[in-house]
Length: 464
Image 1 (cartoon, rainbow, N blue to C red):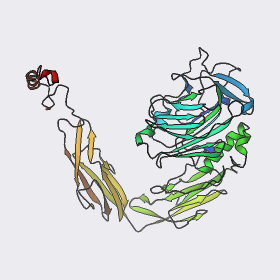
Image 2: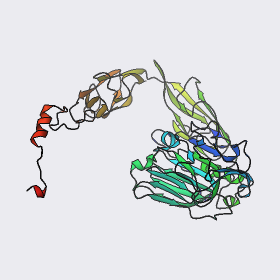
Image 3: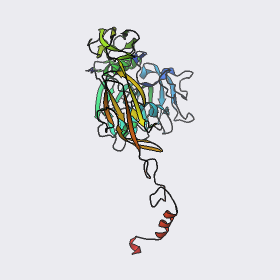
Image 4: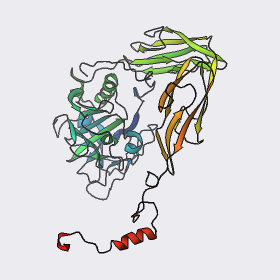
């Protein structure tokens, strides 16, 4: 892909890249992978009753729910010239009850998340979509997202009948932005900031459907429930372009050779320390990827081990939060030393007991002496029939009356979060019943009397 920029982003402490590849592609967030080459036992023109999910990819159902009894059924194509003589599936005009990519894909794996989707297809309107509101359409040349006034990320129209294309779309939920590529060339970037957060739930009731508005073909669909970085998008796109001989995607504006897979070896000294991310072990990454490294203190109470430095190929050897660039096989070691600090205990209590509304959770937690620990209480805790409001923290917290506060643990401390029972008639758990005219949460003779006294009253103009 042209003009790719690699950006290292630290989120909170450090966002840790997932150190796994599958078939040379990123495994982190890979929730759906449908490949026509996995269809077996079919002859050219046979109806396709099930498109199996690749083994080991999340827990997403296979592609099912196709009515194969009429002319709308998708059919198997054993070898297609437009896909480099690879297999594909031929679709005709879809119906809303057919062509379902798993009941659980959207609701369990996509809703509320950033996305990256690749599909290899031929036909302008061929792709996958969710017809339930809020809508999510990856429909050939465009992405459609949202409810009401929907937003579009448009790639333009490729040739319809003779060539295949790799469509790639990303949805960045935190920054509310969508982007779309055709054969590796960025075609559109859309600002989604006008959409409410609820529009990123994608209407997960029915899952994603696959098909086309006009006759067309699909060879492969790959779905991630995160936004891939440019290096990852290039690797997936190059794999697909090579596999299906899509030469338009391999020119100077498209996907490029991703380079060799790189190995990262992570070690810790002493070896029993287990607070390093990635953990001690061997991992694979794409060439050029940036891998964040993070080393936290390690408790072996009463002892505390603190990070000393990195040795090896880390960028900043003295920093607990650093990174390594995988432009070669790399090795890093996180070194720890025994600290002069000792363990102290934070005992967190909740009054009344059982109100599950604090972080850290109710109970005993250990930290190094001198550590500042964040405390969080839910201001209004609702777990019907319970309704509680936060009142205050006890002990030496910084701001006892604030739900969000902190405490510095120079010694062991016990902290109590106090809540008031605020259950009242008409609250979230105790709504007014129908016919409760006097709003006391009882339908009784008082309500009947009130109704009777108003019987046949009329305020229409004709009643004057």
